[in-house]
Image 1 (spheres, helix red, strand yellow):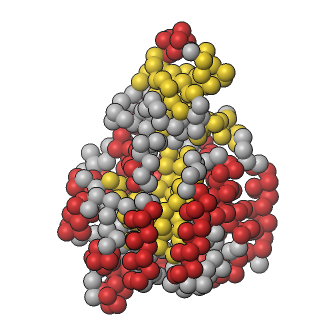
Image 2 (cartoon, one colour):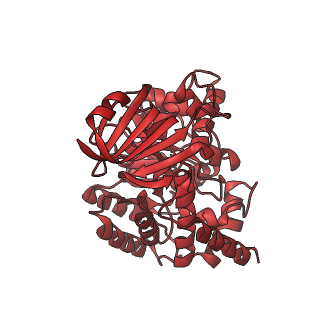
Image 3 (spheres, helix red, strand yellow):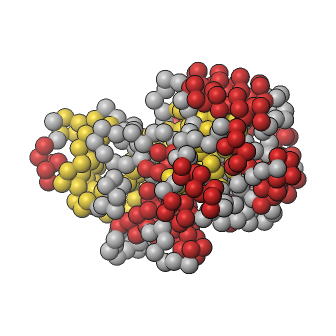
Amino acid sequence: MQVNTLIHARWIIPVEPDDRVLEHHSLAIKDGRIVAIIPSQEAREQYQADTTIELNDHALIPGLINAHTHAAMNLLRGLADDLPLMDWLNKHIWPAESRWVNEEFVLDGSELAIAEMLRSGTTCFNDMYFFPNITARVAAQAGIRAMVGLIVLDFPTIWAEDADQYIEKGLQVFDQYKDDNLIHTAFAPHAPYTVSDQPLQRIQTLADELNIPLHIHLHETISEIQHSLEHYQQRPLARLQQLGLVSPQLIAVHMTQLEEDEITLMTDYQAHVVHCPESNLKLASGFCPLQKLIKAGVNVALGTDGAASNNDLDMLSEMRSAALLAKGVANDASAVPAHQALRMATINGARALGLDQEIGSLECGKWADITAIQLDDIETGPVYNPISQLVYAASRDKVSDVWVNGKHLLKERQLTTLNSDKIIHKARAWRDKIAQ
């Protein structure tokens, strides 16, 4: 049988079924989709390929899914570190955005972020930022899969004047990409403290009509809870439930401030949580009760947040932090084992975005979104358990190759659709302007 690409690997970790490792297996790609995962000897006998790749020291995993980003904020990386969230936002980030954010900023920042994500093994990201049409265009040109957030706020910014205009401009982006293979959309009201009841209700109605997710920061800090109690006499999640927003479409980001009944509520409504451990640690926002959520049956994905509060978009690092932090918070070394952390960064992210029938695991029929990671090396060897090595030992410099829809976007550490030198040059130019 003729195929486009045949990859022979030391290990294949499909994620589905869970905690499984296939040794000396090969993966065949035809027309952008996975058509076979079989022992390498059988693959050599059964398939002829336009391109054959030998990865004798590598593991193939599903492309990592970053379920919460603010991609263009890469240009603000390191601008205001070591500050509490609201000081960071009100006194530094929002003023900088007010002065500098425009279409060019979002274009250049998105390119920088996408280049970093591809070199870190990420093949899909869920974004929330201004000018989602620009981020979508950059992602499509680079060949990475993206869900761009149709952001909504009550107050004016360079993107829109009021909530109605945010929604109308978001609907235009939805219409532009509704049939696109790579680019998807989600409504992205920023947070309960920046969006009032009426637009939230309208967003939920539209999300139901269009069958797209609803992506929001929620229960991120104790000050958010206090603000909600003072202004609405109820906690934010209860308010969203009352407005009809708690549903299987809900992607709730952070969730560091949760009571037992709220975990039950998330379970009952089959809503999703995106855990951002490194950003939460850096901003001292609190600890997401990860083990409790998982035990309750809540689907938990992983995100990096933006590079202005992390300060990277490294999902391998995020997996390690999530697993280690969960053990410390639960006082249980068996909490969130390595294979569960890998699921959070792959199939759980796909499920949160409503894309788990297409991506998130290496299975025949799914899109060939694949990351290759060198494991048998100085920093990661010897390899007893490849999944443990991925989560606890591997770093993003071990990512050698990345495919999205079977297209080779990172080849032996070199980006194939983006110009690294130009991206770095533009990032330095923005630094010089912003620093002044």
